Image 1: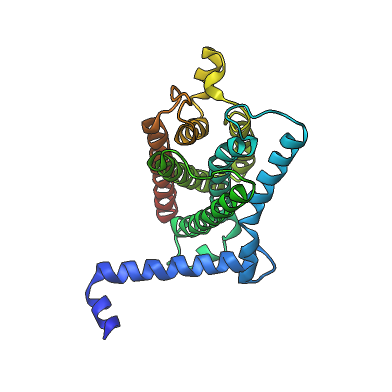
Image 2 (image 1 turned 90 degrees about the vertical axis):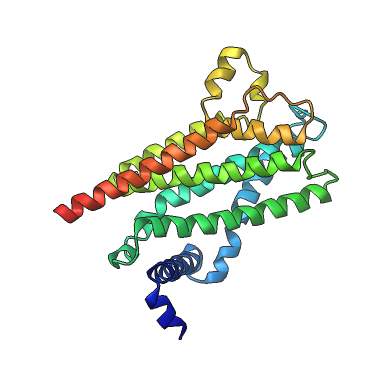
Length: 267
């Protein structure tokens, strides 16, 4: 009876079909990511957590004072969380089409489905990682709750949108030009170094701060820190710029995808 209703309503049928495709893509990703078993996905949230742990441990053992605030751990966490979330989501979305070429042999599976499925897994992993980080901060005697929860949530969601938009563009370009994935790896390193994760970008000389303000990840890090520190400068915070950057990347990626599909169809 339900199937008949779906067949009569093309919109509902298309949505159900899309849901099934995304579920299949996600299940395949979960099984093939580690150990050829779905439980291997448990390891995924631990990678960024280990990354953050190594960085914070090195700085603490070196005896370096926190660049801002009283807690070194909290300062680095407020920079590492948005930065790694952006890098992991965009990077793994970018490689998803190359890694799942076999699935796209089925006409029902589109490139956007593969990348969206990968994005859902990475976002889920990021939320789990954030939860673990907050638990660890509590255990270390730090308060992981921001002074301005609304600002922190908005910054977090905006980072996800930015990573999704960039991931779509990188994935499409990487499928058309595999060398671009190597280029993106190099660009990611530059974005990471200049993100302001290890320093206060707004405290730099005006000329240097202006250059870094063009990096949307830097803007997100600065935005996130204003939610935790009441006196933190917001001169580099530009939410509209980050949202626009992500939207342009998303639209550009979808447009390129549509163009190549038409080229293949005409050919």
